[in-house]
Length: 165
Image (cartoon, helix red, strand yellow):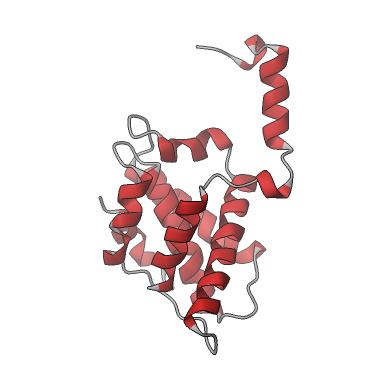
């Protein structure tokens, strides 16, 4: 097992480059995943007064903000578990992370054009799907595909249902 002390100069520079990435590179989700997440989120919340096309664009921006928030608040090594079905976290850790990250996102990100309850649902849904995909034996694409059955409320008592396999 390689330790930080054993990193080559090049590996250490890559670590710093990733950590100090400019805003346009601070996304771990692909373009297709962002669009799919926004589409799935659109089925959970409704942005008032905006037509469907405008709503979809707004939801893409919300997903991007949450993805950037996670990039800033999770080690990328954790975030990479989303792409690793053979490694992952347990349900207890997933529940703890969704609860803490949703609260932190709600404290740090303000989306003034949607009501606070919808904002919280958006945070919990997107964070919940990403953390769920970080569980062992799950793939992000499968988690997204099955997200229509997930019921998200403004309360904390639905986190277990969000994380069910």
